[in-house]
Image (cartoon, rainbow, N blue to C red; front, side, top):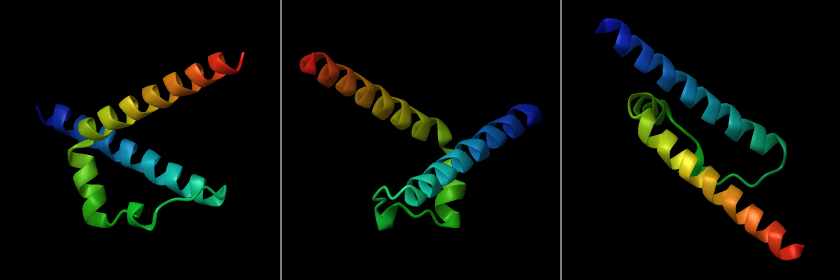
Length: 77
């Protein structure tokens, strides 16, 4: 039981770290990142605890973008 909880927190920490690195990388590449997307420590802790919800939103957004890009590429051909 304790091992499962530790794995859950570890995955949440890795997910939060990936989001932070992605935001930092986007800023260094000159991509406009909204100022309100800056995470505080409270936001990070919340993300670590509810990471499955964030992962679902990320995957839905990723799939939507990929489908839209694929549809746009097909229209141009």
